[in-house]
Amino acid sequence: MEKKRIPRDGYLSELLLRRENGMVKVVTGMRRSGKSYLLTKIFHEHLLGEGVPPDHILEVALDDRRKARLRNPDEMLAWIEGSMKDGGTYYLILDEVQFLGDFAEVLNSCLHMDNLDVYVTGSNSRFLSRDVITEFRGRGDEIHMFPLSFAEFSSASEQPFSKALDDYLCYGGLPYILFCDTEKQKTSYLTRLFREVYIKDLVERNRLQHPAEMEELLRFYASSVGALSSLRKLADTFLSVKGIRLSVNTIGAYSDHLVDAFLLNKTMRYDIKGRKYIDSPHKYYFEDIGIRNACLGFRQLERNHLMENLIYNELRQWGFSVDVGNIALTGGDGHSRQMLEVDFVANQGHRRYYIQSAYQIPDEEKREQEMRPLLKIRDAFRKIVVTFEGMPPYHNEDGILILRLEDFLKGQQSLDL
Image (tube, rainbow, N blue to C red):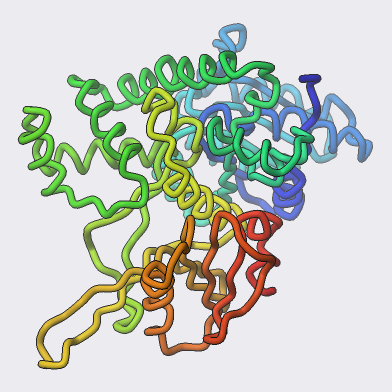
């Protein structure tokens, strides 16, 4: 496939909205999701197109060995100050800022330079959130960058919907996938990336003594996407099935490492009637479906699970916070309880949507299973069922919107049809 520029216009707009706001703009996200390209190509070229002089864009790729001396905090500050020759606005772009020693102190110092506007990338949530967002005391502005959304992917791939969806559900949305010509190239790239970048990075960053155990946990999450995960039950499963003895605390720490590296996203359970969060268990979804599949050697490609992960990712990319909904029903005796689940409770400001992911609804029993939780919700927010195939969008007799996945993937406006 001929290489094609992927504009990522939404992220460029976010950068421009935050331009010269007196804060450090921190672009976070999983490795190879396009953070560096966003800042060093798209944003850089936008600045040049506006007429910003090239020498007013100070750019350093800190993972480049040739820039090793600038990883020293004092060398970096001296280089920045020496590069600013006049009172015009300068734009500092630091790629992979975690390579910079005492980087929080350096960036705090940069905030004292009135004509310097600062942008950085980093690939670890806890690392950046603790050292930048917290230490800046409100002067760090985070922009989280996801892999390509389905709309971005399909637009760049220029394939019919069904073929683009098949590719996306198998290989995910990391941008380089669009430049691979064969299935072998795609699977090899994702497998190598999973093994040689993500796993190696996790082991080195967290100084893991038993990396095979963490990989085993990641494979468990990959094979049970959308299932509730209790740390205690996981510990029991590892012992009984794998013969591996892991404490609840170790499994919790490993899970946090996977979330911090943006491989997984953890969802909370929300008691819809009680209007409160439930501590455990949780659900985990993969930030990129292709990495999930690579973790399992491209086996277990069940479309119902992949579709649920895809819907979750799209909602997040549209700017929603997403929880798992729970509804507790009391039996006729006033004591027995039944728990019903709503796949997603999506919130954005004053907007809320209750969404079920139903790959197929082949009969009345399945229909009742999917509709019942939604019908038990007594508020007036929109209730939606997304199916893999079916009729064009319509509302059933209970006012529930039935959406095909194809229509859902056209964008968040589909939720208000």
